[in-house]
Length: 96
Image (cartoon, rainbow, N blue to C red; front, side, top):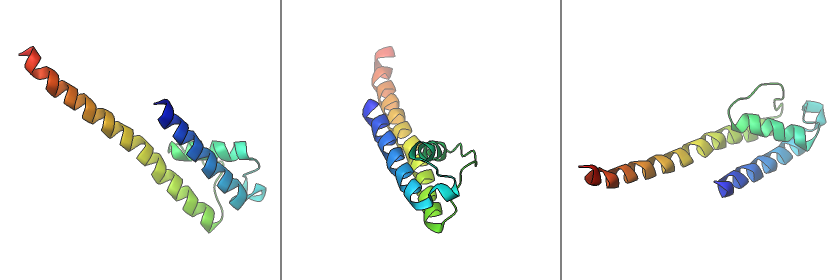
């Protein structure tokens, strides 16, 4: 879990830095920590809307971050669910 979380934070930092460079202070991305806030709210699909990309490239990156957010939720959920199902199947004969 720690490795997975570290990976997500690195991707969020990379996307935040990219958005800061592309959008710049004139579009609300005044610093990398502010862009990091945007990346986390976008990746978690909260999306408060207080900072939004204005350029086409920024919107493309924003779309990728949203899709990445869903992927980040779906992949671990599937792995955990498969493991729990397999464990339950292994334990069923022992209960009978």
